[in-house]
Image (cartoon, rainbow, N blue to C red):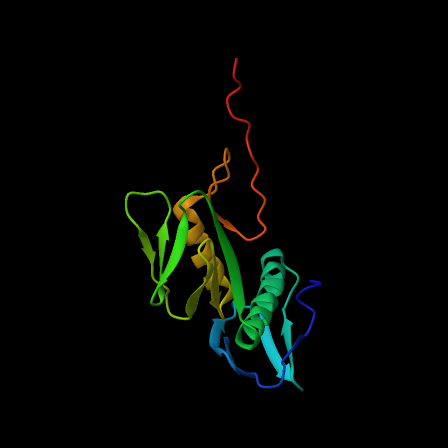
Length: 178
């Protein structure tokens, strides 16, 4: 049995979980998330606890067991606390500004780069070189943060670019002079 898959998922107060066949809908104070559970996996609810079970011990079914349980647990965390990724900008003249809901980046290009938030995502600028991506869907928050980081990846020689807060950049040695 999967160690992660067999752990029960507790449903906190203020969160409601609806199970309709394969559809699991979680509603909480921050919003609503929906997920379709993969075919052989079953989800049941009793006394404020969700249990994820599998019918057999085949390899691909075991893999789906832990994944399904984790996705449901992430949905419950998302509608109660939400998720956030903090990113930093390093480099002379590199900065970010809030333009309404959008972010406008100066990253050394000849033009400013504007990023609009999709539904369910909000941006917050804490400093000219630090901003936060927030939302209730963990996968969506991570994907938007990764796409913003991709605008100007950290340079391995000087370390300039957009990076996650606390990320360590492996630096390369420059040319050796004579």
